[in-house]
Length: 332
Image (cartoon, rainbow, N blue to C red; front, side):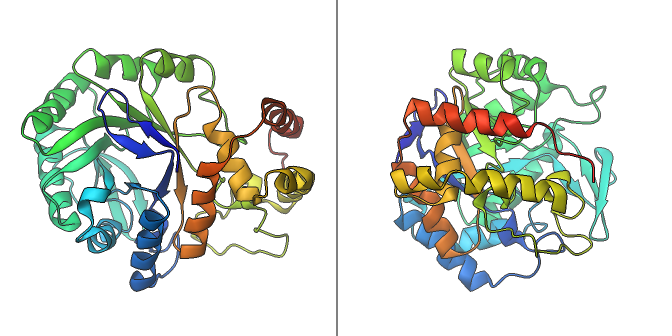
């Protein structure tokens, strides 16, 4: 497995990470077998995937609890990443963000809140430290919750030995610079897929120049780029893919036709489409890790296989040109 350092932290993390939103279950992903999820996490570790990314919001704490069960007895072999800043049923702090599954969700990065969140996450995960602690979303209450106060708190967690590295998710370039002005930012985690490359250019270039690792989430576009979401697939109300433009029948067919055109590449590299797409993702300038969601052992092993691929530059460019040819998703 390809290992890459997380920023300046000295932590060596697998370039392929396991994302655990789906194993949290709930309306977005449906019910899960927790024993199977634990087995999937063990399969990831056995395959060299040591970076496990979770968050309290995934299943309202359930994902962290499942991860905690899976890493028991194997903690020293895990680069454990979780997040803070999204709360549910806590109207005393933060600003209202959205309603989901009958709960009201708030954003807050107030130091008092994230200290409480950290202690709860440590308990769920069954550990006394987090390798990578990330703010999940920027605060919606900038007038009361400054990045300077948030970062001061996170740096204090490092001094206390409760976290080893600091990350920020879903941030812009201005916010990244503000984080840096108040401490050491090792990681940003951003949405990045070959179908959504908005962070290319200034943000990726800056992170590369500053030795900030970029963890790309949803690199398989929630399964669409695996080629396994066929034209007969229907999405129920509340499912995470329902209503998303790339999953409409019109756009789905365009993507599937493009993927079918890469059959020669999967033969050349003896790989699956998922592995080809993930390998392409971590080959992009500035992208250091790909956070790949999975909840079954075979999915994990497939994703992990991307860590052994090195794509030729001509093939990397060919894939980019094919994707560019799609353009934006078409209206139904």
